[in-house]
Image (cartoon, rainbow, N blue to C red):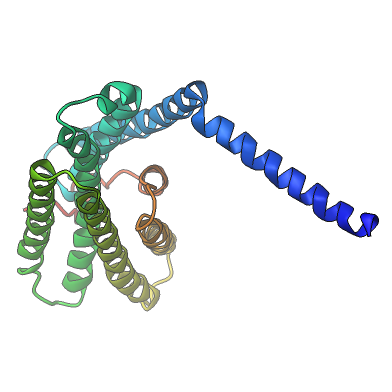
Length: 263
């Protein structure tokens, strides 16, 4: 009987030790500071990469204004830069009063993150419909309306939380962000998938076509998965870093091929 219970006792002991280790790390201010400082560095690196890419694009095609690509990288720079600052000054942010300011400080980058990648979905939708000779007049108004609706709902939630700071309101706010993330994931799946299938049907086999096909496929898969996961946890840095790497290629110089500026 003793020999049969020994493995079970050993497993229970190992599980208890593992739980205690995680509890010690989770409750340790030193470990917390290390983890948040590491996250601050990672977000700062992504922010710097985004602004470098923005400058490179501007130097490559200075004759265009704020194109979709430039706005995308600029928003990436802002989102990740603010996140880095929040992690650097985390303890100060936790002591901000009134408490609603803490929620606003944490939620604003999430709203900008949604706008950043919704812009990428808009860009793909425009390419898809233009290639099929379908009018794109309604896409941009829909983009601005959707973003305005998301921001207005979040502002209302902030006001309610400020007026009556109860835990239920915080849960509703988190559920709202989860729904927004799911909406973004479906947008990537819909238009990224359509654009990928359309590129697959092109008869011309070329290196440029294969690269564009891989680019759309990778970005669609990464963003759909990350926004789906983001319904339950914070995973902003993963899509930001991977998408910046995949979309690192500069646009062609003017006169080589058509470029897509923001109207």
